[in-house]
Length: 81
Image (cartoon, rainbow, N blue to C red; front, side, top):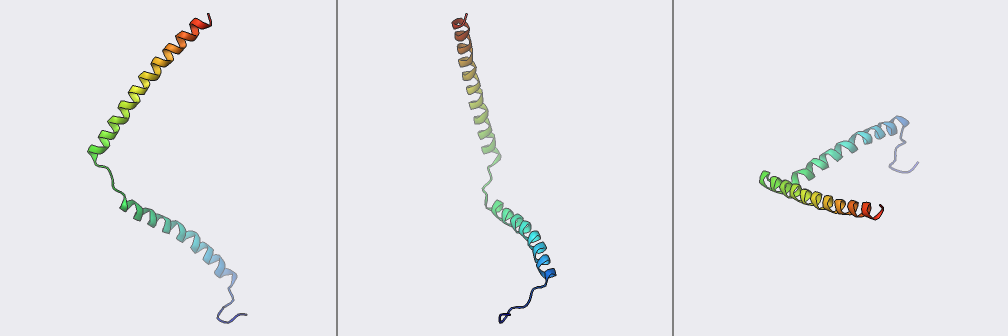
């Protein structure tokens, strides 16, 4: 035996494992909460503006891809007739 150490009983190791399994998720949740407190959240106006940009860009790309698809399908149908 080394100086200053005490023999560990098997029950102590299992209880330490159980405590470790319980404290890790609790610490994780505390850290997540602390990080979320640091986040700068968007205002409602900023959120609505960004949503409108996404909807607008998606609409424009939908029309563009639809036109390209129409031309390619017509061109291929003429080519393979």
